[in-house]
Image (tube, rainbow, N blue to C red; front, top):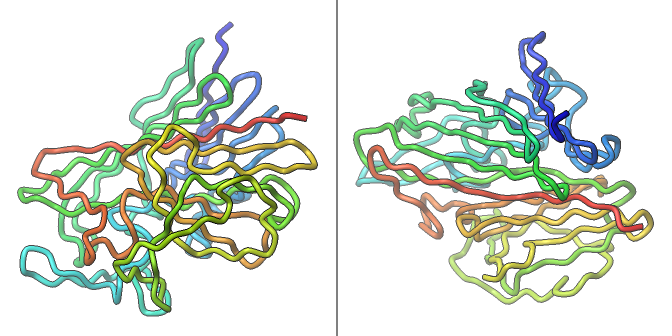
Length: 312
């Protein structure tokens, strides 16, 4: 009997993928290629997700839970940018006058590969973007691989390939909400960053990087409100660690080098926290901070990992 298994539920309009081993499980929706559950002991789900794929489809823009951020991340000022001397305006979702969270959060991904053996269970999903928004008239493919491994690790790799005949601007990220039970105020938090991106009152970067030293060591989150982007330290430590001191349930986030930024957002209900791995800062199509320019036929990958554990 293999240590890992995979099950794909294709009965509904939105196929659901289950990756499992004896300790952990992950549930992935083909809708949005979003992570809806990551559970230890197959019972304690640390993802603040949806009750069903249909609910996700109906409510994705209310919080953008687990949304893929592509080809831009977070906010794009006034939904406008200039590229190759031409001005473009995004047509999709706006909040407070800014285009937010990219163009793929509600895309229907196809399952192109899956499998399981004694080392891992995985699924690979793919979406071909074909100029659906006039504000981003560049073709590209987004491929997402989820891989559940030993030691309660879930690795998520996104690969973007330029299918256009010209170079294109791209950013990448995730908008995943995590919960460890109880209120966020009662949890311990540690952040592997010493600086953050300065925002204006519209949450658009000013271009300045400023010091930040809260949570350099684990401390109770308390009433802290965050909707900020942090520049991660260049070391091998997790980007952040969240722990419930009452239960010992712990999450550590392990982005690799192509995700040098971490956006943190605390919703009003204080039941979860959005921990967003980003390849670039918000409004990168304009400020160019972290922006990737992909040549025709070129691809780039972005990798992050989540580890869940219980120490009590």
